[in-house]
Length: 476
Image 1 (tube, rainbow, N blue to C red):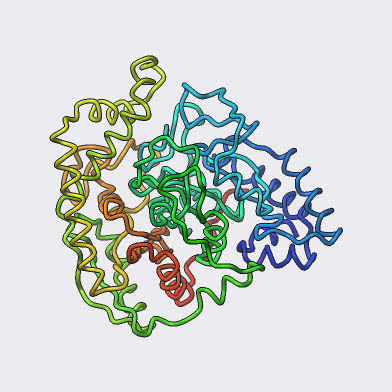
Image 2 (cartoon, rainbow, N blue to C red):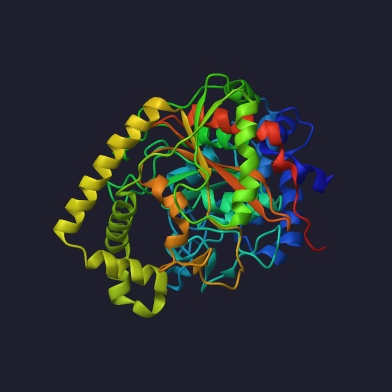
């Protein structure tokens, strides 16, 4: 029964729990046993809270038996990214500088998931301070891709994506600056949504003006992600950029289905095979049939892409400023405890001038205007999530694509981070596998603040293809 419980998507599992066809104790125990068997190969859940989880499961069962109404995430086993602070639980940020840090408070995403009835099994691995799309750090080592243990799961929410793919948890939170929810989702055959800035408020707040770094949901299906988004979104008075719009209201997780139902008749899709970037042939080959799938669902598909001029400079400049603000003092005081990726970003940030910031601001403003005009003609942009397939877990980063050198660890992620610079919501949905069995995701980008319509398009594609059902085969 344990493996059967772990095989269910979150919506199905939530229904079993609410109908008392499975207890929270049974569900949590099954997932703990799954972690103990599978994670020695994957290394996704690096700090574990099993005793606490079993206690919370017992409390959840008692509350349901007493007739108290269950939360949307009642009894669902989850894990939190090791960048999200968790009260009383070690939170390392993947850095030796915080290897023993135990916060006294919960990040808002953690608090909202707990309040909705989710039961945390621990923390998921991440590169140091989320820098890069390869999940490895000096504290816990590398996380491996469940579909091929010699490959990376991506990052920086790589531990979350790998845990979901390996059926260790039902839902997970993550964060995304340049692709950290989307790249690992693509690499691990799960769904990751980069919400609109402010849709999921981030607290504690480190920069009141930061709209480029967001937190968001990950799951095995689009419906699972929509369920978690409903829990995570909504205003918070402590977060200046939080959107005021409340999430859709439904009392039962099964209500997500009605929210996402429908074909794509009348939906205008812009299709770009490569966004003008170098993309590995293996990725292009997997994604090519997706164009016809979208058309077959009723969408009007046209070859087109927005003009992303200035997105690269704008993203890199404001990203560097973000790192200098957040970690500049740490690098100065404890340089031996901070890795090269974070140090490189901090140094770039400290070298910025007012002219640099002004130029980047103007570029991003012009980009927003062009993108707004583009999405006046289209509802969705379809393009690659990642320019490469999951790469060797022992490689630091991708150094070339199709013979074209990548000059920094950021270059190969442009298909994701250029979209970050637009401020638009974007989702990675499973789109198939290479002949060697490596997952590839399709990136769908929606209109400004159009998170829910975007998820409806992703759901239709997912239902038509069913790639999420392919389970990785892990050693016994």
